[in-house]
Structure formats: structure tokens, C-alpha cells
Length: 111
Image 1 (cartoon, rainbow, N blue to C red):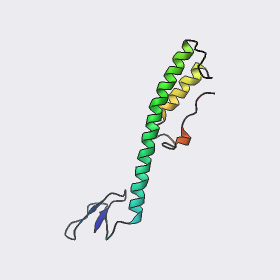
Image 2: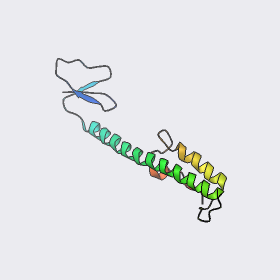
Image 3: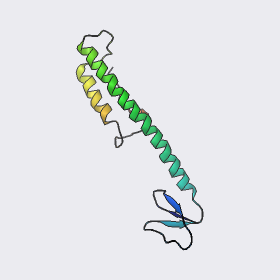
């Protein structure tokens, strides 16, 4: 038997064990729990990818701004203000941001 919380966490219990607040007793772990665990695993993987992208992109933006200051002809399009604004958006791309960790919601580089 299993004691399951609404968040999907569960523990095996014997008939002599008491349920804690919020737990529901199940004879088998229901499919929705496995689905929730898998969704959380996928979200954690996506979050790790997006966090790595954010850190790499901040480094790229810094290099871009330095290149612009130095008059580097290989600098990408966009003004210094556009790149600084983009950096602010990139730094905000983390847990709690709208659509995070869906990569389609990432900020877009200046063009």
C-alpha cells in the first residue's frame, strides 16, 4: 500500500502505519503519479539546458559589447543599448519567467 501526496510524492506503508496530513491511501501507485514524476524529470532537464544557455549567452553578450566598444568589424548588428537590454532579458530567463524552460520563449538577439 502507498501513501501519496497531491504533489506526487509517495511512500510505501504497512496497514499499521498512519497517514500523514494530505496523504491518500492507494493499493498501487496510480499512473498519474508516474506521469507527474516524468514531467518533473523532463522539466528539470529542460531547466538545466536553459540555465546553461543563459550563462553562455551572458558571456557572448559581454564579448559582443566589448567588440562594439573596440570597433570590431565582426560585431553583430544592434546598438549597445539593444545588446544591454537583451542582456537584461537573458538574465531574467530563469525559473519563474513566463514560458521557462520552453526554449521557444528565450529572448531574441538584436538584429
